[in-house]
Length: 264
Image 1 (spheres, rainbow, N blue to C red):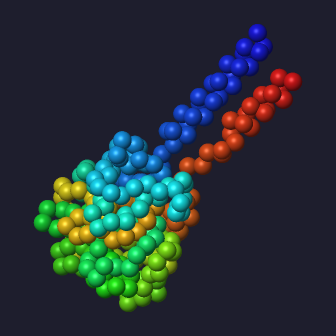
Image 2: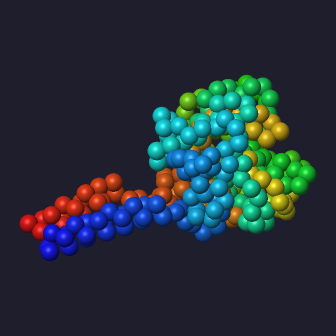
Image 3: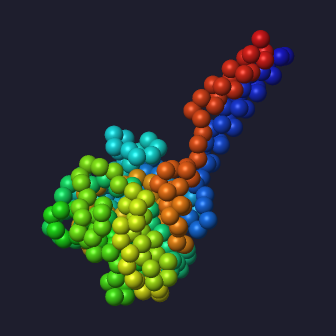
């Protein structure tokens, strides 16, 4: 009888651990979308907030395991047509203040055109925000809002006119609060610009990679989208992975060991 009870308890612990790990979502005030890029399910990226706003892998982009910042996967955009789309939802349509944070690793130089990284479109606009590499071969980021096509022009580590290196991970944070836009790289404010308080908004998709513009060539990991402006401490917290759920890999093994000791 004791053996049967022992085995039953162990089975419950294993199932409970699996369900807990599966159900763990990333939660934070104002966080409306999160992609870990650890895996795809049925051609979709699962929204890690639990909100159900999954991303559709439209063409080409793929999960990779050999170049990762957090977790066990990242997404590679290797060709001009690679793209992921997220259907419009209320929080994405309504925000004015917002924060986009993600890890980025360029694999190739700019093509000489405006190569897309991310775009939240709105009716008649592709800048809510729109994020590109600048139309020059060295790598910079162009981060803009409409109306007025306002924001950072060609920024890299060190500020305007500075360049990104290839094959190096950078943490990018674009923070819009009122008419202020702050651009952070690796937790440091590198640029500040004036943008429209009420930028273009409405029902339209969010894109990673190709839109009407070809995709830039890059790895991306851990994308967070907020409908509020984060402060510098919060940016560092996200950058350091402090919001990610932690589940010890040896939890079940440890529990099994404890039970075995109790049984013995």
